[in-house]
Image (cartoon, rainbow, N blue to C red):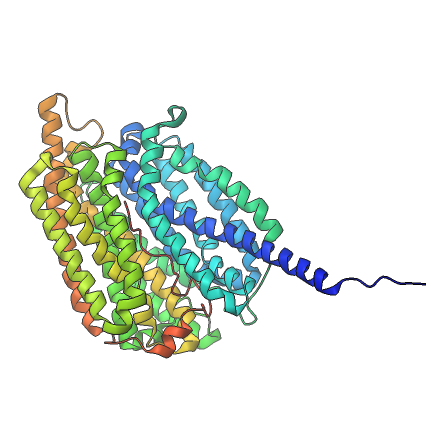
Length: 525
């Protein structure tokens, strides 16, 4: 009698291949979600003129289409990360992706600007549930020796989204698929989202944090109220005639935020689960880094909106023309980001970021000079030097800033610090978009509103000239913001310490997408 013995090595090899295939599919799902979020946050700008033209949206509504997403995303990041830690990262990821897909459908079928704004806010809130789970899922899915390569792929996806966002938006808008004008920029998410949900249910592995922090709902409500009391009148006040209630609301905003700070201190003493760990701001470099991130977010939010409107409404270019003009910016940004982290930061420390701020400032000044000199006759090739300088400068800042700032934070608090740092950048972008009502739209006046430009070639030329004038005015604000960023960078450490840099490779407590692979500010308009 003979007995057959299973071929153990072959069985183990087959199991290993199956596990590897499962991990690769899971990685594709979460990277697609990250790419979808980044592209949706950037491609909308390129479609704004089409949205305004076909929906009759006012400038205030246009601002909320972009700022509403950024604000909802920022305010939900930390809470979304904690909900994943408590209830399961896979569950929250799928919930966020499902909600994001539904919100994209609502955006695509929006009957008017009001519905579009509400749908965009919902889309940002769902992204805040989905995105924070991505680094945590990667962390628990892959063994330690594979994570460095995988997080490198994550960074590459972010860079790809930065390069592709404007072009995807331009192609979908100018292509006018099925006569839907701007709507395909949102509707394209439906098949991608549905496929991601189906594959995610099958291939993602559930995980929870062993010691998850509690959700701070009261803190979230207080922070939301305080920020809305500032941003809503700042954005809508110009169109409403600067009413008294707007000034009262903005004056009361710091008081509400002060109540938020006091509540957070009490919450920390009570159960150790505040929304924001305020002691982190006692670390000078972290406080300064948060200031840099906030100021840089303001500059980014303002510049990308102004840039898009200048090219299309001021210069009369189509979406594809505008998108292609931004390619030098995106390529320079991606190239500089890679060089800054791998080669320059270890050798020169914070000087890399300071050089980035100065290079961006020089690019903004070149852009300002060209816009003032050539007016509505400005050509794409003339903008290329300014785009290359601004893109390279931004790449030298956005890539290394997290490691530089977090390097001074104790390792046990790195997850919370990264979550707060991410949130600060998104809040800065929302604030920059709100400030555009003063820095840009206030100069344009009512001529740019739907139906407000009159008729005839003379009125059209006057309208384009008003957008060019508003662009030069807003660029001075951008330059001032970059000078502030440059000054704040002196408060950062001269060098990043090697131990912390190594620890930063793996996100500790992924609140709001912690870790060096964090979601960067929108790199293209």
